[in-house]
Length: 204
Ligand SMILES: C[S@@+](CC[C@H](N)C(=O)[O-])C[C@H]1O[C@@H](n2cnc3c(N)ncnc32)[C@H](O)[C@@H]1O
Image 1 (cartoon, rainbow, N blue to C red):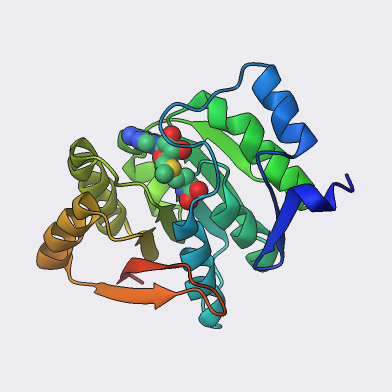
Image 2 (cartoon, rainbow, N blue to C red; image 1 turned 135 degrees about the vertical axis):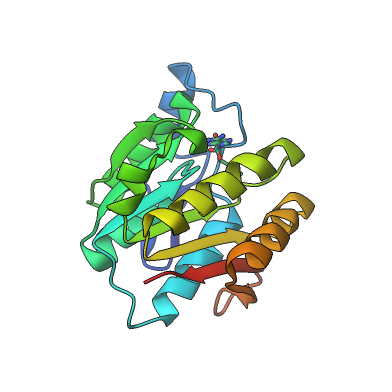
């Protein structure tokens, strides 16, 4: 698909704009994400930039929670040759996830489900749990804290949540840092104006 004017490059990946013919075709077919999974959000770029700066990280199993179009998980699949489960509550994001994976000649496993559906069996088999811009409403604080807590208790080796520093995300950080420790970092994707914060928990 040589629609270069309808795509941008982020961290070596091709990301379609809303004007991309394949994106427009999905919209015409009626796929209409309704929980903000309508585009690629900047926190994904912040997360990818952070991961790319850590040469020691090499997870083999990754869950991208609240994946939307799924760029961070797709980047992990390519960079680490990892098996990636891309989870989202909104089934309508999945065609956009699969399109973005296909444009980048890679594959991830789409999973329609909520943060609350991730159980100890899944999380104990996960090296890296990531999420980008997944805590944008107050009612998401409890499920996101519960997901992170279960991941830590189940033995997920690393958890990284990126965010543009929305208030609910900062509430999540306060609770998780108090209960389990970890780091809250400010981060800017190199060579860009895209910045945010990262909650990083090393649990290996
Ligand atoms: C702001 S978008 C971010 C998407 C993607 N991570 C990115 O950075 O582009 C938030 C995503 O979280 C998903 N989401 C919201 N609540 C969820 C829940 N309880 N469980 C799973 N996914 C959820 C939405 O459907 C949406 O795709």
